Image 1: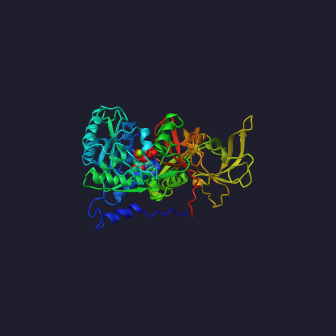
Image 2 (image 1 turned 120 degrees about the vertical axis):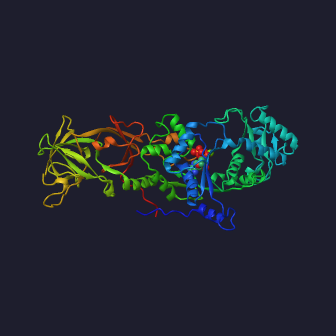
Length: 559
Ligand code: ATP
Ligand code: MG
C-alpha cells in the first residue's frame, strides 16, 4: 500500500528560523501551550492541535504548558478538566508542574486593562449590542463610536465601577482604541471587557466583568513566556490584535502566533456543541460511546495512542483546511494492531460442528502462537473436542460456485491449528434451518498439516471448542453518520445519523483465554477483525467486546 508522505511541517520551519542565530528567539527554549476550553471532552480535532503543541515542544527539546481556557464563565466543569488531563496523559504527553487556568490571570489582566486606559488606549463605551452593529461600518465605511474620546479619568472611573458590580449586563464595555477604519474588523476598537453577572467555576462570584478571549489569550501567553502560540486557522485574522495587545499592555515577552488548518474527518462531526447534542439527546450512550470521535470514545473502541499519534503525524500540518477519510484513521489502527494484537479464536454467529469420528468424551489441547508477527508474544493452548462451534457462514448445504468452505462432500478444510476435516452432511430443524454440521477428521493431520503432504483444497476455518469456551456479547460499529459531511455548515447533522451504526451480537462463543482479557488489550479475532473488552460493561460473568476495526482495509490512499 502506498504511503501518505508526511508533509513538510511549516511550523517547524518557522521555529527553526526563530531560534537560529539572529532569530527573534535565538538561544531560547521553545515553549508552547495547549489551551482547551473545559466545556466538553477532547475530540480527534483537539488531538491534532495538542499533538502539534506537545509534539513541537518535544521535537525542539522545549516545554509545553497545559492551560485550561476558562475565561468564559459559562458551561465549565471540573469533570471536563480531569477528563482532558487523563486523555493527554493517555496519549503519552505530560506538562509536569506547568498546569494553569486562564482565570488565574484575571487580576493581572484587569490591571493591564486599567493601564491601557491610562495610556489612552482603551475607553468605556456604552453602545448597546444593537447599536454596536449599527455603528460598525462596512468595508468602505469606517466604524464610529461616540464614546471614543471619553476622558481617561471618566473611563477609569466607569471601568472600576463596572468591576464593582454597579451596572447590569451589557450596560458598558471596555474597548481597545485601535483603528475604526481598519480593513480588519477585529481591529475596529474591539471589545476587551464585558459585564456578565455570572458565577465562575473557579472564581465564584468574585468577578462580574470578564475579558474577551482576544485580550486574555495573548496576555496569558506572554505571562507564561510562550514563544510559539500555535492555533487553528480561524485565528489568523485575529493575529494583528494579538500582536497589538502584547505590544501595548507593556509586557516584555512577545510570543509569535502561528496558525494551522483544522482537521476534519468524513462521516463525523468535530464540534463540542454537536457532540454534546448527541450525548444529551441520547443518540449515543455518552461522551465515551465507542462511535464518538472523542478520545475517550476512541479509547473505549480500542484505538491505541500510537495509532492516533501516527494518524496525526501522517495527516501533517497544513495551512489549508483538509478533510481526511475516517478510513485512514482505521488504516493507522489496523497497522498498529496487526503488529501488536494477540490472535485468538471467536465465533460470532455460531453453528454446531460435530466431528463424528472423534471419540466422545475425549479432548486434547493444541499449542498455538499468539502473534505470527511477533515470536516474543509466545504461545497459548486451546482445547479441542468432538463438539465445536464454527461460523454459520462457513457452511452451505447447497454451495454457491467457487465456495471453498464446508459443504456436504466438499473439499477438505483445515480447522485452524487443529486437524483437517471433510464435511459429510448436516442436521436441519423443521424449518430447514441448519442446526448442526457433520464432518470427519483425519487423525494423521494434527496441527492442521496432512502426514502425506497432500494439498488442502478447502479454506482454513476458525472454531471454538463447544465443551470448553465462554459466551460473549460483541458490539460491531459502523459510521455514526451515513452522510460523508454531516458537519457542513447549514446541514442538520442529526438528520444524517446512521440508524444502523451499532450491531449487537449476544450469542458469541470465544476461547477461554479471553476470560482474562483486560480493557485496553487488543485481540485479533482470527478472520474477523480487531476487538477489545468494553471498559464499562465487560465482566467475568458477562464478557463484552467492542470491534475496534474490521480486518479488511478499504482505504485507498490517493496516488
Ligand atoms: P469546538 O468547536 O469543538 O468546541 P474549540 O476550538 O472551541 O472546538 P477549544 O477547547 O477551544 O475548542 O480547543 C482547544 C484547541 O484545539 C484550540 O487551539 C483549537 O484551535 C484546537 N482545535 C479544536 N478543534 C480542532 C480541529 N478540528 N482541528 C485542529 N485543531 C482544533
Ligand atoms: Mg474555543
